[in-house]
Length: 466
Image 1 (cartoon, rainbow, N blue to C red):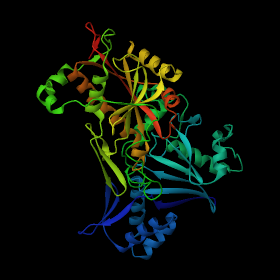
Image 2: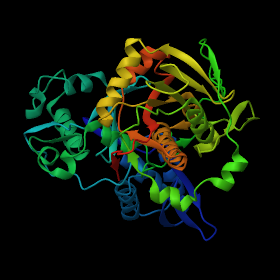
Image 3: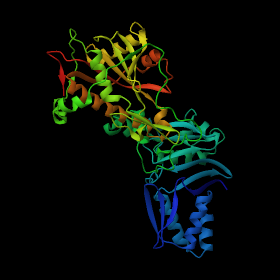
Image 4: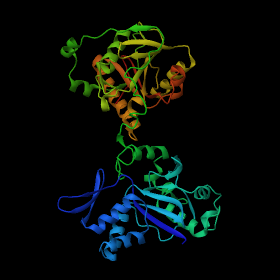
């Protein structure tokens, strides 16, 4: 029999018949109409949803229900071009790989170029007992079923010229090359990925992050996107409050919010006056009371609600799903009334707890990296960390992107409050995640640093940015 193609509806696709009798396929949030309902199309679609079939088998089924062969072939062609069909390539009775569309495919190449390399965006990973080859540039993912195909993909390159390799016949190698080029998982040497700015500007991980953290043509429900609560029933949700550090606690004063409502500058004034200020007044450093007010106004826990065993939180800044995964770690170099060192802000008890002494090499490194990033010595570096399980217990694919959105919201809140208080705020673009892990002793897969924000007292001749 040689090479065969088997067709099936891709996962996450549903058949809907509208009240006026229109057949529609749906993969939320996308849908496509395929004309009036009839028993032949219904039978074909139900077979496609059940398991893979050859085109000949599907046509024979449709003809048996009274549909013409021309209409059936057009229908299957429309399903292909719409990206609704998973295509499995088999060598006789042995399934080799399957093509899983995520959006409508481009026209296939007539013949792939002879000088091909893997796309620099392509990645191979395990999914269950199979391997998945995918790229954020590709319209599909390729699931490898047969280890011989995987061996060929990792070969020395002899497979590029169509010769049999690793016991795969030449026609199989040629078909693999054709489909990988079609999927843009293989690209011409020195092609657009290396020569065009629109592609060269993207690093592999950044394009992956963008593609996988946004809902796409694949439809969210089939691809594990959004608030799926995937861990419910398998893992306990993280509590709202982390385990406290054993270091001594420092109670922080609470500002008079009623007074601040009357005396604070207006929102317009704060937004218009907000600036990044990198220079601090070393003779009059930020005080414990000021740091306490900033933390209270930006990130205190105002309340916790338990709904179905999950703790939801209220804080001054917004957070998707009310999960509030962010934790603040003031790293103090120079502050009035507060010894130098690294602290954790307990937003529930409104206390600072010592995490690590100032002399520890990890604390020194955090401050050294911040000094380089801001081109000045920070009085207080606030490391923003995320207890990622608070978000990832509920959300898939987009979870880390959501965490970074929360960091941005927190940054803006801290900028506005610091401006209202007359302090010098400066958000940083990066920090030392390894130093944070060393200082806290936290498992980085459970809690990791995701942002840095510097605050200090404003110098008389401060350096301001836009």
